Length: 480
Image 1 (tube, rainbow, N blue to C red):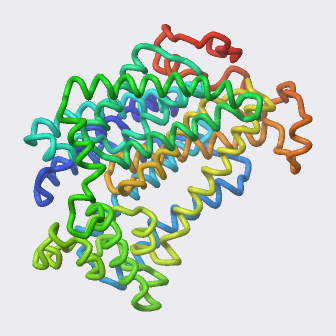
Image 2: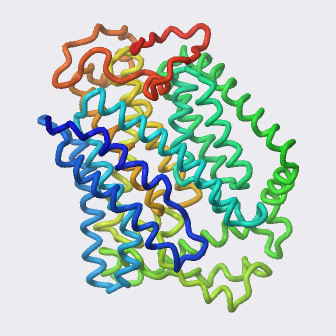
Image 3: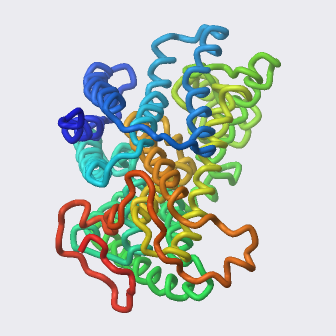
């Protein structure tokens, strides 16, 4: 009876922040954005109170949880020491709080029905964010050069990761999912953002690695990868024909460094200058190196890189830059804000958890390919893998909605790993022994895991019945 209102809480938890936006002026729009956070926080706390609890211990879950709590609550120490502006501190910390809240809510042994609701709300929330951000960016900007930074959804790579799991790993296609994926590629092309395309390629390679747990399956995975690559090439060709300026902008973007005085790409140089100043500040004293400069602390561009930006920045404009928002480089900014004690534990723990879950999925897919909840596990891995992919070009925990989505993705990944670890065979110590193993019969499943749990296809999770399966695919549709 206490779970009677869990479904509406799940939707309230995710959908409001899907409409979060980047204001054209950093000093305005805070009230409207604040209104979107209140229902999400309230719904998250309600879900946290009614969520089921794990009764078994998990070292991986304990390490990740401790690192995230240390990151969020440890930031108070740096704030007390540095006395940063309270408003800036809270605005920068809010996405990290949502990241923690999303993780704590999702890292629970939810039933199959609740997990399906989480996945459905995540997918639709990401689609809404994709469409809303694109329309809002076009409506508030001018030409392509002005709006290209505002049309990108903060969870675009997360949405692509889930879709790539369906295409490459699960080998299932539907008109709806292909259309959504094509839409994400079009936004990437219009944004003229190289880091997004690099992130898409990285997620594509991760999906191929998940789909081929053994050497014999590599060529089959390559064949399915060619299909997805063909879709990407087709969409790129259509976009180039429909908007001729796109190809011109990409050409200028790729070869822009040749037109500069220093011969170096200005975007890369500004990122390096930002990281250098953050590193210089945090290493200036033992106190800041241990506890960090705090979230919301001001940083500039390092003067070391001023000669490399000749012709792009005047000396006056260069020294006028003074930022307090989360830095573009996620990894360096964590060291800058939290130091060695409070900053680096969370990135290292979450990245290590992603690696552990990645190899566990490959092993279980080889040994027990039809294991329950394995599809949920794969989609959660691909969703959270978008966090390091997003960090190539920006801070994935800078925006509020991406913090919430990646927190839920991490929670689902850790929770599913914990449950499957108790039910499925342990990984062999030697690779030699693993090669001789044959697919094992399904063991008795403890707890709430039952055969058939975890919808194997995204379309089934979304309630769509028309899905296409590639010829030759021998993976059964458990939901059917």
